[in-house]
Image 1 (cartoon, rainbow, N blue to C red):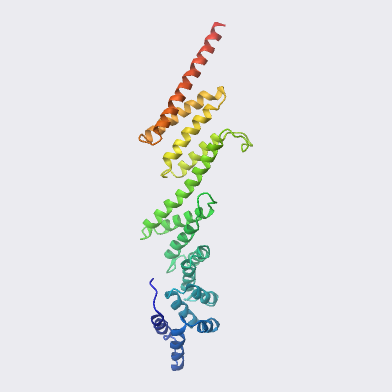
Image 2 (cartoon, rainbow, N blue to C red):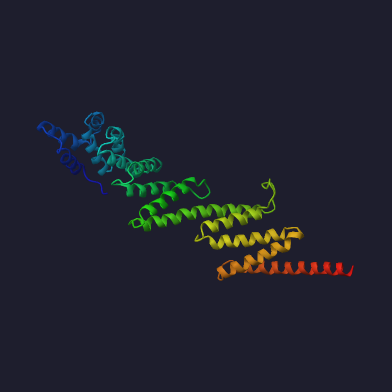
Length: 311
């Protein structure tokens, strides 16, 4: 909403307030005080101290429309309890949340938006409150390298908004945000899978046995199951293929053949899904090496069987 000049806001407040004003003297005081409330700090302090909450209410709205959000929520903080269970409470609560949102205090704003839509599930501003609650959480979502608790919160808020308002004019916008949030979570999983791959045969972090390559495969596969349409699908799939090959290559003879065969199966799946992949040369090399290893193992096993039969 565009900012309005003090004279316009003063006139707006005056017109609203005059509905409850009865005396000519009060009329003059309202006009004088309201016209100066945005430009005189002393007058604002007087408004803060006054017990005339109806006047405070109109002054707060004037300050809000003028973009004076800090002064606005200072007044609203006094009125939230005073107007509780009145017809003014709903608007005060929503306007208070919007003040914090507009000064980019998204954590506080999100708290107030959530309080609003839980208090007024069918209120006048409930759709907006759910939208801005999601946006507040979205702006708190951190870099993928950091803890993603805020991202999960944002996802829930956005998903709830879409569920409650499937035909909202904001649907396209919040759907794009949903994908961005999912991408951050996928990137987090990709980075974790890459870390396991890079650790390779290091066993210092494998207190309960297992392998870093196995952990890489599980992490990447879970990411693909949870976010099947991610832009990192090709990269995750290739990482799984490489991890399977490394796992087979570093396996004992008893497990090697099966793991090389799993690598070959992974290769065919990768090639079918990404025939023009930028990783295809590397994937083809892994396939040839795995296939050669399988044939060598088969030859070795056949020789052992032949000796047993001869014996």
